Length: 68
Image (tube, rainbow, N blue to C red; front, top):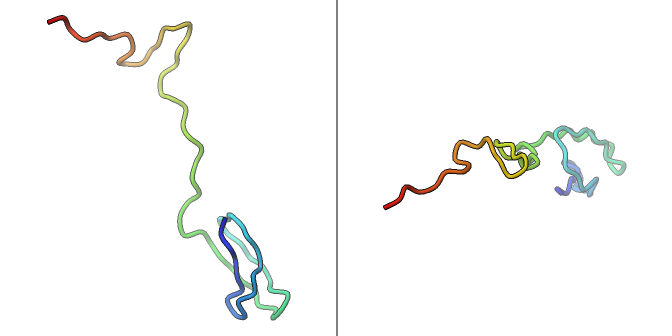
């Protein structure tokens, strides 16, 4: 989480994760408008292969090293 402070008087306004935020400071009345500098992290992706009953359709699934 990021601490959000008023750009005019420095009062702590919030602790937040945001993409865009507009918040008015109760102390000085300044309207603070902020936007995220970097995108939020995404949840981990599911694997590209689907496994059913021990069998898989992964391109490397079930391969063995060649003998020798």
